[in-house]
Image (cartoon, rainbow, N blue to C red; front, side, top):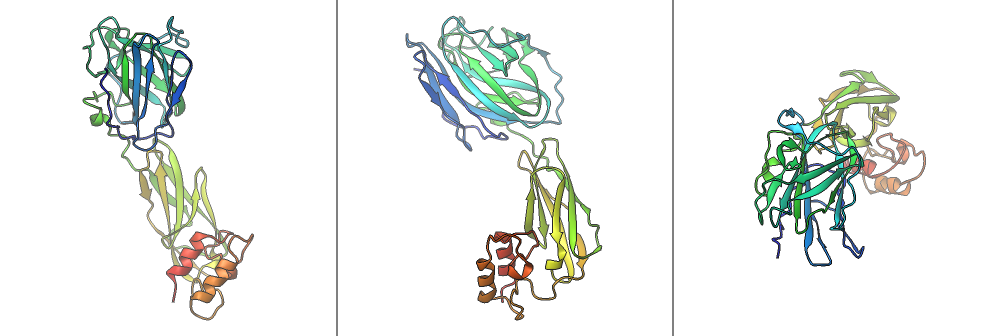
Length: 350
């Protein structure tokens, strides 16, 4: 009986990973990897010789490291051919954060020297015969080379976005346990590969472009931010006086603020950016002075000089109504009444 790897690797960066294992009689097992759970499965031949797969996908993007070691493995300039015997397939859909060259590591276990490789098809354009050569039998081994030559690495230039990796069983009894896709040529996985899980830990850069610090504003104001990161920007949040008022998921990063709904005086604007590796950064604050705004206490919807249950009732009565006014509860001027306005009201309670 084959050894089973149960410890799941931490998923550093991915949008989705899917595996599909097919048996000879076309029954299908599929398991999406959620959080830290590894997609697992097993393929068996009719003769009980098995090509197994229990995969935890880890995308390690050490973008600062240059790929310099090893030649690119020779590949077929087409999809992998269908093997004479169907020993099963495993398909992974992965999200690549940035365009560069990646090394693909596969942790394999082979039964003997005659059955020591598996085909890997990247998208529909490249086919590698992973492994071959001298691999210890009955022991998990990290393999990053093809066609039996340790000098021909499985390296692939991948553009940012979704890609498909398809492992195809070509030798009986070969097991596949884990996969690491990394741009860091200096890392050689050991054990279950935890040592290569450095990932992208660099926060994005973000700043408020306009309005400028100490500027006086009134009426409609466009708050603009600039955000950049090598792995891409997931979203930019705009905050006024520490309260999130808008989340923008694509450039340009702008927020239309109706400053007339704010009280006269100084207000602090910040922007918070999150990259595709979930690193976050907050901009330096910009302080603006509002004129022509409301002189009442923020959240005092009935103008009695205090924020209490009456104001809360007014806000809730107008919850979700189109084109609300500040007096109805649109306290941040974003054209709607929602949890952000409720938070502002409650922060000024009393």
